[in-house]
Figure 1 (cartoon, one colour):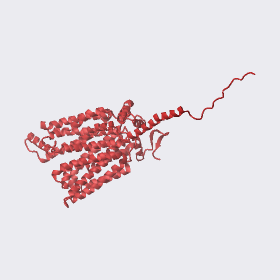
Figure 2: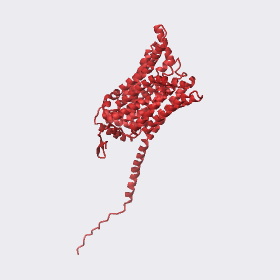
Figure 3: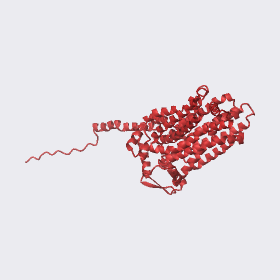
Figure 4: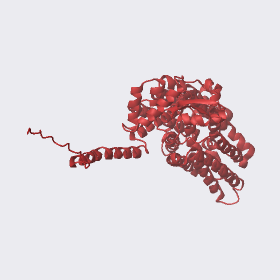
Length: 536
């Protein structure tokens, strides 16, 4: 018989995995999935707070930006009588006769108020500079104006020409006007959306810090005495020098680099510097989304923002909140702190030190607001701030009326003023600037901030002129005017201005569409939908 060849039976595949097969995914999981989860947790934790570079960039922008505004508002209070004496002696030597009191008052008023006119000019120049030179480039160039102002004010006393003080004050006003606008743009564009509000409040911190430092340096024990006032008035050059040394180490605004200059490489590099090499992607996607929506739209001029119906209510809200921030009474207190405390019955020798307390109060509340804004939101802080200010206006009115009823009443008036300043710093002082930055998209933002700051400078000038007339006409009832204004502003914001917390610029614009009566608004494709009908 012929032998049959041996045929091996096929072996069934085992249903049980081998030891190596079991160990391999475990090893991969430990080094892969677990590492991924750790990375995600680190990302979530790190994005909740600003990076060191972001904080340092905000400081570098602030010291030569809005710090100059606050510093130069307060620094002229201390040497008032010494500068008036210098003007009087100069004119007497020049014309060989005594100067009458009215002429001296007019010249001093020009020296003080020309700063606000310079600010108005600067705020209208700022948008053009920010577009042509970039946000960082405009801030750096702006310091040359501060240094020129320092030279003019520095040579006024040695040369015997008080007119140089007027020129210097006008130039430092231009510097402050440009600095406020461009710094607001820079901070609003380098911060991620979940930190944009708190970063915008860095402007307020530097503003109030400028006021406080100006008040401290202006004490007669430091540079506020008769011997050192020429050094005090030209000290505005110091912040400019600091910014020139520090700001060049930080990159340009990423939004400006990509949307205005179409340079994605530099944009990514800047984002990595500000947000870290891990956390920059969400912000890059947000910038690209806005760029896609804008579809090459050019930066708008101021008149184009005024004539754009799709931004009508954003513009109205910007004008109202910026004007009322000045007309709320806070600038009246800044301008006439000494006068108000004197009327309230505070001893004259204590007033300079109490005035420092007003600056310290707002500085503290600005820091507090920067911690609260991303948790509480914009609306509750600004509406609550105005309501508290209205309440303290009533209390202050009562204490001024009955200031002679008891020795402790003047100190209750003082406490009311401190509470009023605290309420302003907690809400309107910082939220106004944050809202102005957030309510507009990239093409409109420079012009919108220019409009908002122009309104603030004009209001600042008007209240400086009108408040003495209000005090003369209404006396102890003067702050009832500010009670009405604060109440109306809180009502307007409640009905008109939406919450902008944790929203992109496109989402904020979308919220205004029901007011602007736009039928349709094109959005980047999301979940298969390209068109959002806001009328439905």
